[in-house]
Length: 271
Length: 366
Image (cartoon, rainbow over all chains, first blue to last red; front, top):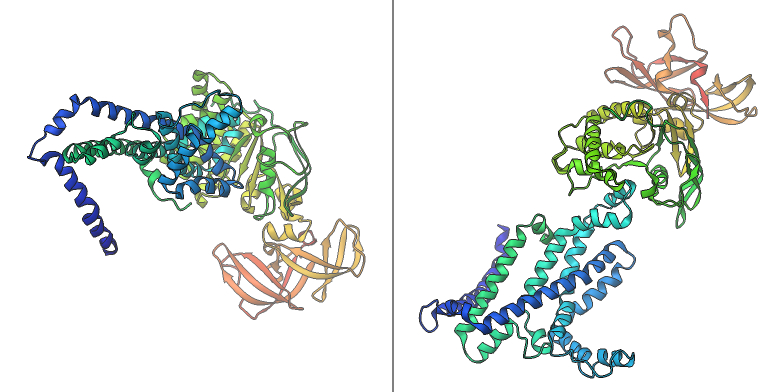
């Protein structure tokens, strides 16, 4: 019974992950008495609605940005094998660095006297430093950077599985390279795109450190709101928000898994 | 089955001139020159690594030659990208687009050429009929068997009426029965379409059955070009003799020359062989004969072939339609003799002495 080998992990996950999560979620309906009032109140809760909308919007921007930036990188990774090791290192290096460190790095880059502002002023494009840090733009830039690998790797995986003879066949049948990309490469990479979009979007929904550090206190996300309420010891409200966030992520994952080929894109691939 | 009436398209002629492809140090293709005629079925035959596929890929435009020229109908295409060459191509693994239906796959080259939708549907229908798959248009490639997929690939390669069709071991992945059916079908298509076929295979039997001419390749070079029967009956070197069919190789020394015949001493007897070249007396040479053209002398009543030799039977195998004997000649050279089996012919036993005979026309000096 090989699955017994997973028993230690299962016990660990149950004890230190599943139980606390369930206990936390229970508080949303049991603190201080059994009630669904916390959920019933959400549709009229202006702070919640605004934060939820903002979180969705941020995640959407970040997803689109990392898709547009990541797809060409994934393509290069697969189609330029000579450069693949270098590209891979460049993708993975930040990936291995702590999110906290990277967020600090973005503060340095985007600050009033940060490298970006200094460079823009030196180039004569700006007269006075622009306010980037502590704006939604800063959050979007930093989050896109942090989440890019999650977009690039599934897309690269899908691209790698495209039989190269299909590209030759398309060319031989009269299709110039750009049409081959649109008619063959792009449609066949869609499972990877869907997987990347899902990963980035769902991860972005729950981002906390980066928006808290570079996004400033005005445009807050759901996870920042949860943290605030926990600080105020409003456990029931924090638990309610957590439940909503978790449910949203699960619904999205379920919906994406139903798309053809996406389930496969998550499967481990030996190639 | 219209629009593809016999002779409606004139096949392209292809000229390869000193074609060469170097990878780092090795020469994958090393000075190949071939003149492929309009409407011909030419096969590039050779073992793996002989350069046959690389040659085909250069004609298709997927590989760039490092030297030499490729001219289609007299026009050099070396600088032309594959999508402008208007060549049909069938790959070994079919290379059907998995996200498109059979119809969309076959319509693909038409779409690239801006053929209107209605016209496209008509041509796709005709192509499907031509490969005997009518009604399969709505399926996806994965719903078809290997043989059906290859027919779709064939339909896709000819639907836009190219004048040249390239095929890279198209039947390699199929089982024997299916392969033989498709071989016949390809011959029929070739006759119907009138276009030039260049076919790559490592299967000599396939090459012999299908081709008008075969170019045998070895080590990046063309070892011999000719009609199947020329290659089989008159191999011009040891490689061709050994690669196409089975051959016996007999070491010999040239003793004298008579017209176009060489008299050579071989295993202690004088053997006559055809030889267009004129080797000097005393030269060490190799004679080849085909196993099925050797006979036991005592089974031949009446006409007696000129070449005779005494041998010992070292192995006798009954293989249904024929018997296969391993023989040892006087000096120890092994030979194979294949005799059509018949209940009326006595089977030889191992260790038996026998005299074999074969005709001069079946003896080649290589």
